[in-house]
Image (cartoon, rainbow, N blue to C red; front, top):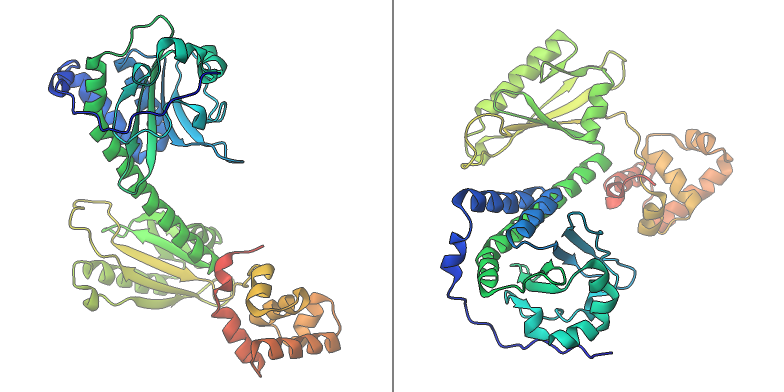
Length: 398
């Protein structure tokens, strides 16, 4: 087996043909290609389409973006535009065996820079993986994003196809800044999306419904808890795209409150206090508690359908169902003690909790004494307070 040499670590000079490379594509085709690349930053599922366009530009048979190399049980992730060819297995063989591993960022190289043709054909990497996929000519570059991550771009052609020319390298070099910006944008958008998802999960675990309104008071978005509350049709509905209360008097108060909050959206934050009301429920259950809060406007967002206010609603009659395991870990309780503490936190008396858990009252009292000892409280009301104010509710249900 031929040993794979490492790639030289000296930086490659900037190609002088970069300006000419942009002329190889018509303005329309270049615009379409860049549009696909930047669209992929916002819609990761469209990366295959962007890579397919790159494959056409370079007349290749594969274009692949190595998002995450495989390691251990992690198979890694390769996004590949394979056309009519077989889909690439991201971990067969391990990318660490590739002669293109460990490259300096932003340096475009080809097989000719790494191995002689004889050594390339004799390498196990070529024989075991490249040849079966009809991969012979390879142009590779590792793109480093601003967070220090590295994404590998690999453009290939089959055996017998022309080698990648200096013009091909220049064209690839010209596209690198756009690919890097698209990856940076994807990372920023994805981070925001993940943070928003985390906040949304926390609100759901706290059983808080959130309804986002635009400048006209129209509903833009509801989180799952808000959707569940509206679907109950018990005092709150969405009618004609607006949040409404079932009873006329409640609805007049709600609409007036929403309008006041929307009118104050452009004012400084200190002058935009949240407003709260209660909404009666036809079922006779405890009224909904609503808080309406304005959302600070984005100076870059003009026009309609932008988030301007949020309605937060919580069911005061709902039952907390925190993860038993988290509660055990947090308060060092046994499973039986934790189940009793949850019942008490949900408003049951000790006798009612014992009945709900199908245990004797004396057993419940023994558990309660142990809970008091472990948590350092002396009264049941204190236990309920520390339980409901703890982070355990943020863990969701088991």
